[in-house]
Image (cartoon, rainbow, N blue to C red; front, top):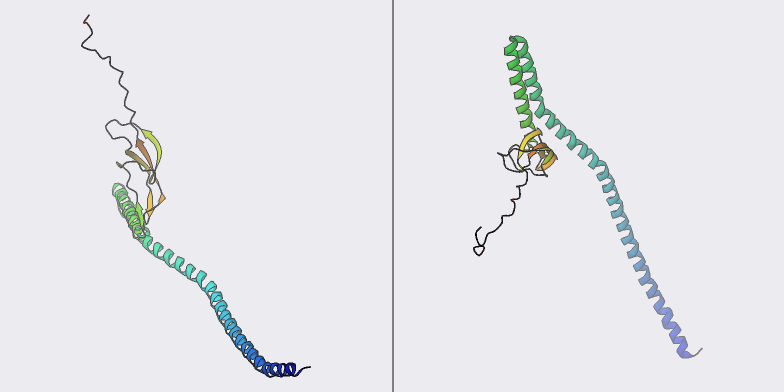
Length: 195
């Protein structure tokens, strides 16, 4: 070997420990980063597992809470039925019947109010123009004194929940016949001789 090659080899051997130390530091740094990322991943996995357990429980609790509110809002209607039935037993027949009818009206009004507090609204149909988004035409009838496409009768009321139709109203719609086409008139011109 030449002298030059020996110096090169000695320089390389001297620089190798420095390179090894540098590489060892990089390995240690990467190992620490890997460990930190692994710990973060494990924490995230545990949080997600807890989330998966917690969400169904929260949904079930929310549904139970809403059911309880709806049932509480309807319970006074049952009370009104009981009052109506109690009036039936304490009165003579015509008065008892009137009390029962009044009680039923109270229950009906109360149930509408209870539904309204939960976002349910009755669709107003009678006398309104037919709207296929809110109404279902069950049949057509012709009443000449009413405008075309107006609702004449309601078979079953419709309802919306927070503005969205949950059941369309079933209705009878006024359908006027098309106007009769007039026969074409013969035009007379001034140039024709009279007969």
